[in-house]
Amino acid sequence: MKLSEQTVLVTGGARGLGRSISRALAREGAKVVINYYKSGEAAKALAIELGQSVVAIQADITDPAGVGLMFERAKQHFGGPITSVVNNALVEFQFNGDARKKLDQIAWADFEQQLRGSIAGALNTIQTAAPAMRALRFGRIVNVGTNLFQNPVVPYHDYTAAKAALLSLTRTAAHELGPDGITVNMLSGGLLRTTDASASTPDFVFDLIAEQTPLRSVTTPEEFADAVLFFLSPWSRAITGQNLIVDGGLVKD
Image (cartoon, rainbow, N blue to C red):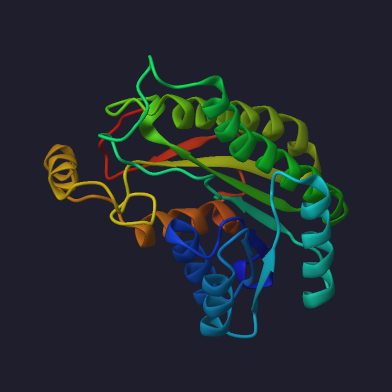
């Protein structure tokens, strides 16, 4: 199915990386559901900016009932089901190495919060999307991960553990859903220049990363979004259960 024929849900699609993904999808002619939780003004403004093929819908992705209602509203709006999901939403997190909780400070509740956002959120969208995808014999699920569990240059314990768990879910879901024509993949970025979550990162950190990266630059949200388009496109139809690192060559998996 071409991108222009797909209806794509982007969780956390109004800000940061999600905003860039939503814009890239709209540029390619896809119908886009911008999910938001608290960023109502930003989501609605972005939907207006991107035009009639885009709708902003509020939902807490950790709430199965709320996710179900979001899918139903999207179906009513576009006249057909969501065919593709980008699990991008990030729960209350800032990439600030100086302010991070160290190992002797962090609590299990911090891990639970990140796991709830990454795993419960993805599980809810996948479970809700799967019936319609099975009926279509087509589905694309893209989970957003991190290169930090290959290279924990800054030890964000809770965030990194949750994304590592999301990779496991990516691979087990790919195995189970593959016979139904549904692919499930992960794209793992490094620090992106710049999103809301990385806005507090000092410039010298970005510069240090750029010096160590073969492309001598820090990946932008727009560059990452283009890689998301590949995994949603027909050109990735034989790829599933994979984790592609999108960081300019900094980390080798």
